[in-house]
Length: 227
Image (cartoon, rainbow, N blue to C red; front, side, top):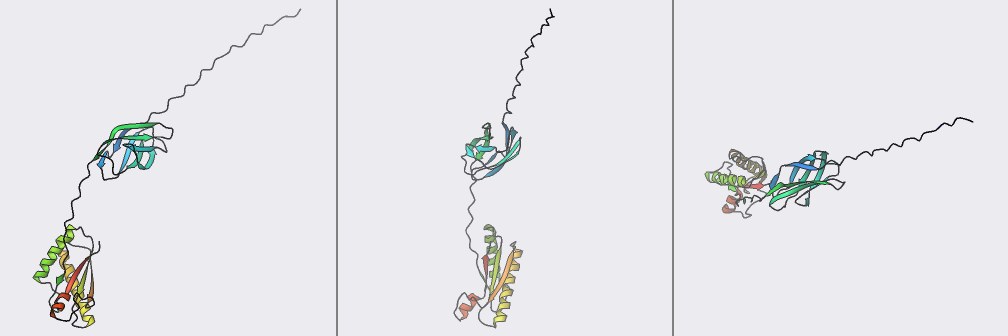
């Protein structure tokens, strides 16, 4: 009779499931700048952790624009103008549906009232017959003009030179140019820059009549605001 060999049973080994690590929490540590006036849109940098591509941002429940993911710790966005005055929560959300919140992270201040622009008018200046130099009265007028231009924050002007109808066309064009240049040079001395000049000679009379009064009005320089 043959020998019987007992075959033992294999021991069953239980596999231990690998634990899935929890997702990294999203948190916001700061917003820079962290305040603005209510009439300003503001580009901000939001710092924290857990940010991802496709993140969205809200401030006070209002969606920010121009959101740019830069890294897991930094996002840029533009907060809109018109937010109510006060502290607003800032939230960064990622596509998986999770978000981080910074309570009162952005402060909106009252808009600064704009100072009204003082009303003033730029005056023309007049010249004596066949003269391009400035009279004392013309200088006083240009001093007022310079102050007005500064109050209006004017960046560029043009000075027109004019003459009356007496004299040749070429002579009057040259005379008008000398008058415009004289005004420009005096305004430079008064702190006004970026001035161009042009002469119209007798071509654009202020008064079309042909008498002493009309001629005295046509011998002039005009200041035009361009910007």
